Length: 407
Ligand SMILES: [Zn+2]
Image (cartoon, rainbow, N blue to C red; front, side):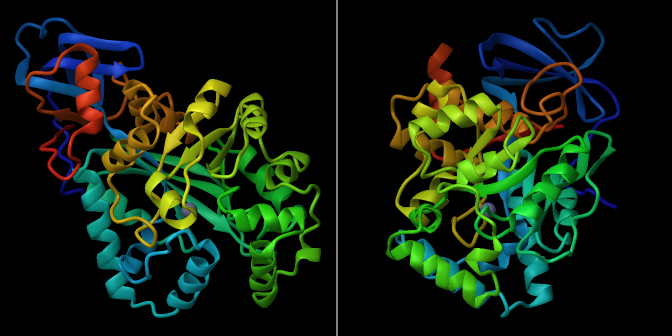
């Protein structure tokens, strides 16, 4: 396998920057980070004697970003669907109708372009949902580590493969288990998938409480709920085959034992404060996809309330079918626009260690510390200092970020 965009130097190099954000609560002024063979060896105030140096100068060095939820194989749908304008069910119907128009070579090229874009925007690790298992190569080619979540939908016995991890230097290719959503997988299978995921080292990923339609479907009321019911019925997933255990999707998954410290809940737009408390006490992570959530449903989960409840938050871009690109900078910036009371450092944490924790990889990604994987990201930022530099990093123009990758 060739990895053209990632050149790991075998020799240790000390990279110096005016500011180094190692992770939450650890912003260092004028520090050096020694990188060797795709991993951080040490963080120090002075470069070790005799070691080759790369002084990056004014700006901020930070961990590579973690995109905890995307669907790379849907990249060929970029621009193919009309803007959803909050009509979630309308969008899902459009997407299902568009997918048969699939051109294998075009789809491959679209995945390659999207993974390269994500790499250039500083993505070190991606949690990638797949129904085919055929997109992981594009991440590896772009030098981005990935967890491929094989997604189960419906009662089909088409089983996700056994979860596992494979490293090549600092580059990870891992396999994990996903279930599409509590409204599209019957209870017996939710339990079986949770058991399969729990036997491995990585979490189970599940879309949850994304739309009003999903909430109404579980509650058995409302026009959008009926629309979802009819949609699922037409696709051979009648509601009475699901064996629902509660009138909310979160309570249903809780009743099935599917929500714990090894569960990654995605979206959670419709979760109320009491639900966020439930998620926090279960120890599950929640991934927000701000641009996709806003476009598809007109809202984004209450991030300040989730943090206050103690939920581990991650960020994802979702797919190019519902988001304009795979830049986490744009997700961070939108989240801070929607919730200006959020601390920029907390938002950076979501896009780094929060995502790594959500993917079960907090010992390898999301921080600058000995043993952690690269790439690291350097943002040239003039004139900012202290806390101001984190604000500048999060609110900078994501299209204009002249960032540099350090491997
Ligand atoms: Zn998704």
